[in-house]
Image 1 (cartoon, one colour):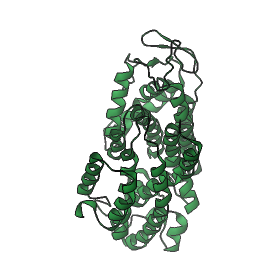
Image 2 (spheres, helix red, strand yellow; image 1 turned 90 degrees about the horizontal axis):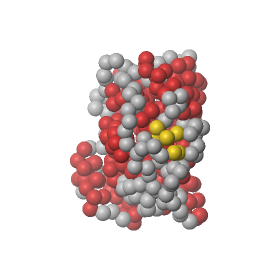
Image 3 (cartoon, helix red, strand yellow; image 1 turned 90 degrees about the vertical axis):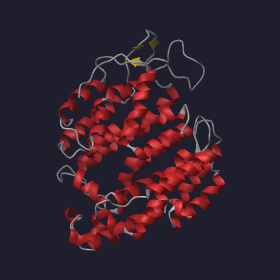
Image 4 (cartoon, rainbow, N blue to C red; image 1 turned 180 degrees about the horizontal axis):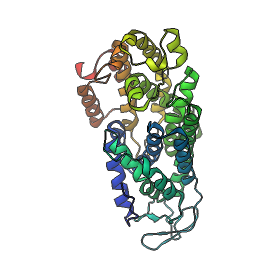
Length: 388
């Protein structure tokens, strides 16, 4: 995949980012589609910054030592240490990214993107990751297309207003450094082998909790201190709910495609299953019992996650639908996991029925108030929404 230093406008770069999110994550694309500006572009770019690191961390064909080095280089590229740059239309950009003739509007965005210097750290990352980008397109081809476009994503990010860059930078760098730490921790195992439930939640924090912080940083600006405290106190629960549900439903794919086992060794050992035998057909029953425990752990975060949703401000382009839909899909997935946990190891896996997804999105398109969340949750805990 060639890395052309093409001259493109901010609008062109942002349009590419929106298309890329739709390609790599249909679920997160639902969130982006439900947002309005300026929040849609901020969340879109922040998500893609995270996706680059996630793809490198999940790449089983890259030796752990190389993965760690690549993640460290990527982290450096996000450090905020920038030389004087020039916008593509010739306008000067200060070291903090503020245009010399900048607008007083904190949500103002340049019409054209910044031009990163040739020695920018992101270009070094891109050169070094080149040999690890698969030549033959596979199911993860879109993910690697995002990795290959890392300079373009960073350039788009650097074109955002300073306050939004600061809201995004810290959580993304924490995610990157956390993934590098886990790669290093299990360098001799060829993949992640989570030991305890505490370690599982530590990993979930780096993989999703940091993203929750990113979202909260962007949304909490301008809210009163009481609401900000509620958001910060419950953001972790919202993120861990979603990530633990993913862990429970993706057992087979995580092991077969990425050689990672997130089901805690401590829980698997209680049912006499080795982590490297997690997908063996003879272990379906015992593994399903551990999946049920992870599902129960996830459901323990439902109440606090709902508090988070109810406190979310609907300003700067944020909408209830953007975050309530993934929350309620998690509710539906928990229902399915409890009904048929053994299916996580079978072809097709465990998913919310497509008609239910369509029905849920349609409800929010018609308009859903925060007061209705509890009722929707109760309905989806009992049966698929479209069956009511």
